[in-house]
Length: 105
Image (cartoon, rainbow, N blue to C red; front, side):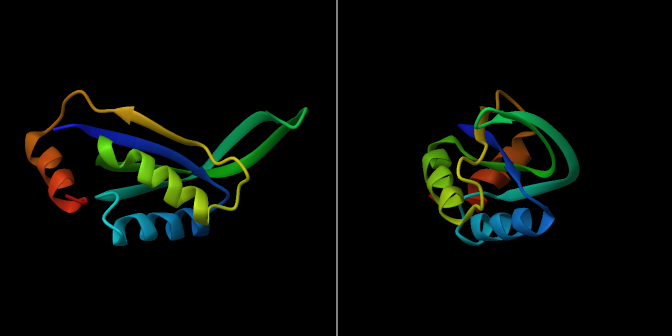
């Protein structure tokens, strides 16, 4: 089974919840964890910025990552949203099977 975690940042909890709901309803991810109150320091358009963001960690099949990137980009408020896929090399077989069964075949 080829499973990935997809790391996404959002402007706030409401946006992350909206994105998570879209992805779960469309069977693109089995689960979206939302983690509040992350501080981000980054350079954007030549300026150093510091903001509060919300992190999402989504569980999915690796083959769905491109569809997830397209879908998140279509509903996200950022011009250039952070969407990064991280391959899963192992884990609880029952949990990995659950991810497989809850996402698009």
